[in-house]
Length: 204
Image (cartoon, rainbow, N blue to C red; front, side):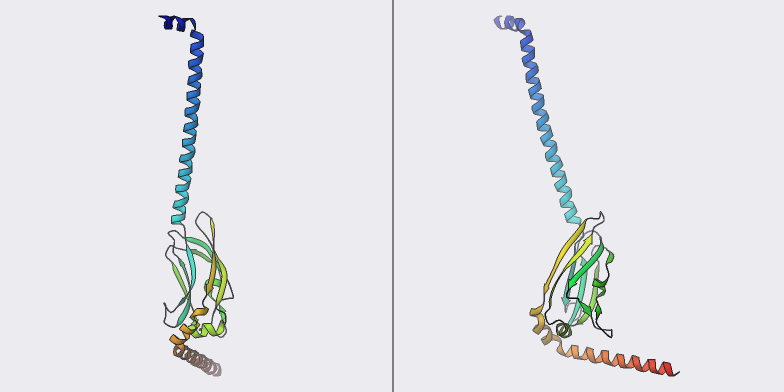
């Protein structure tokens, strides 16, 4: 009875105390919910970032010694990612040139012009030279540069290029010295034949 009488006589104070406790509990619950929401948003952002990284384009530029053709050097550009790459541009120093099939060295088509798009898994190959010929023209087969491309959302990626193929000089020469001489001879004969045909056509 004493408790009931005390509560009745102090009803205002008790209600104020209960209201204060309710307010404190509500504020605490709101802080907890706000923190949970922030953690959920952070987790969602990280999941989206990981998914973008997983499905992003991943373009690689490399020099291939012998896999495409024994004793030859190819420039290779491939998109190993899961989505398309856009505005692909290779910059490299010293310049990588093509000598086969031309009167004078010319820049590789994979480097001279940017590529508008590359589908996932797409691969481009440009024949440069035989291995011995490549090393004759490149006394220091060390290259530095940058590969730049974008994804569908416009996010730009920059991949450094760093090659040092000096260790391959003797390997390439030992493997394909005769082939290099044969290819040079064939090229010379084709040039002479082309010149002879042009001279005959001019006489007619």
